[in-house]
Length: 440
Image 1 (cartoon, rainbow, N blue to C red):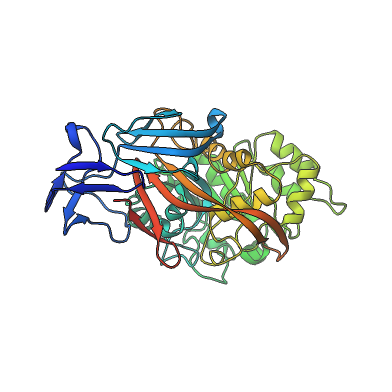
Image 2: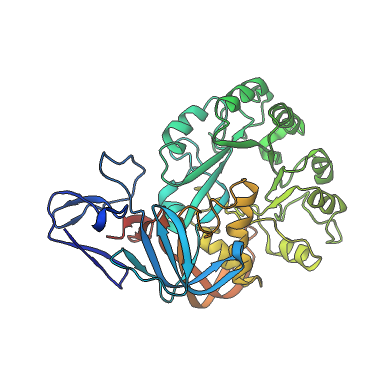
């Protein structure tokens, strides 16, 4: 078995046939099943490798424009991944027979970290396909925010969280069923909010859960009013974990809600344009919002179908209030617009005047820090997971739309052209670019 590194970014083999093929020299490297003249690829799916088979774990990404705010690093460099971990970044790294990925003319960032999305596919009406809609778009760490509750979480974990190749975490919905029925709010009947069941479920799944989740919009709570927040707070306090609170057109005032939140909690959909937002009637940022930010409450963007307003964000920014992180709230009702994917969201913020470095930081480092995974994800520091997004920057005239139907023009559009997961290079393809194939 001989190996030929290719400057085109492909991995080529010769003189092989029908067996497990190790990299040269006995090093941990690209290992795959070689059949029918090439490595088997097909559609990317979460799976366990058979004995003797594993993913690419050694790779050199060559010539890309590296942007890693966690190291204040920006410039054309090579990235070396060894045994699935970042080994070093340098102006030039010799391949010495190891697999390479050509990233010249591309932007290379840490794998994107989405703190708010929904991927309980086929069960929750919100659920999108994790690999096709997230991983194929450069997201290597994703957090599902309340798609499952205490009665549905075991199914969610066994079917989606545990089998995932990428890093996954979740918030547990205070409503026992989670987000199951479109058009019927999960908190309209307080009998569904079972604090004791939530505490027991959470205790059994602490290794993968991050906190509790509650939605408070009028159409979700109806006559329950502010009681779902109290139930979610009871559970999160008992468990000593954070609470993510979904706001926008809430029956209770935003200051009343914020007063109950604690350092480390998350105000999600913070920049929506509906009633009871962060701005008062004069367009000024409410004092309660400044106080919440200063005591450590995260202001999460979470764009979604109805929860992000250009006008709100621009007014807040003009007064010095910035988002704590970028997240998509990607689900079935916004994947075909106005969100589309994480790179599209990043492009919107470029159009709003954020620098590339700022956008990448809010899409990687800040979420990783909130997750308590600094140094592990959201960075290309030596020793971090070998998770990388390779992006194309398209130049042109682009129109971006928020959740209110308002538009902004921009001259740059980011698009994921390759994602590296633990050193394994995967490329999106197909008509909708949502089918992942191993770069082989």
